Length: 259
Image (cartoon, rainbow, N blue to C red; front, side, top):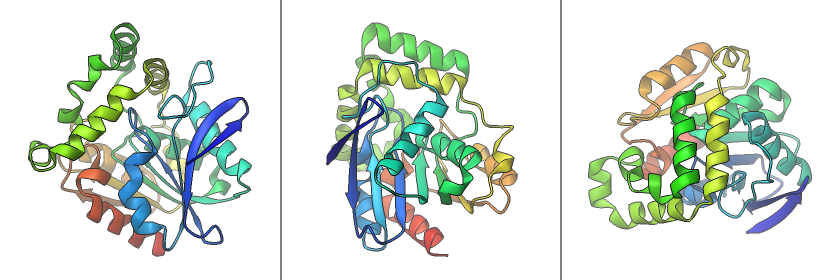
């Protein structure tokens, strides 16, 4: 793990694989950190320079003490690759990370070679819902939302069959900084790319979980229908499909990037 100071922000990242190979930048979901990509990094670092980071306010990355917006989160990702001298990347983001990827592909198309957006939408939830969650976390801490997260993230069958994995992910959620989490909720409250994603030109793969109650298959199909040439892949999983269906997710990612 490496810590960088980028424009006054402490950012943790991890780089694996040969730096001379194409770079795959991976962006985590709300309430997680770069560890969520362990399975994909192991599978793809043989063929790619895999770069993953803790989103602002998550893991060991700071919050910066400023209001957070989707644009700011996108510019954080750009600042990281700029600091590492990387001009163009493949990008894979899940949930909040998927929104960051959409923003980058719309506003910085020259930096994105291929785009993978998983378990996400062009507009996730409602402003009112995110505002309520931010207020809850600011008032009561991470326990306020951690207790119900497993039901949003995983299917009952997976939770029963992989209790250690689920417990680890919920434990990491409890350890997240409440103020950083809430600030990202504020960003999600305002984030709406429904009228913008039609401008995306990067080859795009949309991954959706068949049992995802947060960002549905319908959300994925809507995005795939508006991004020229986008492909839709569904997996038998809930919201964190890269963990619940890790081999299938990694295979879909590898095949798409190799095309």
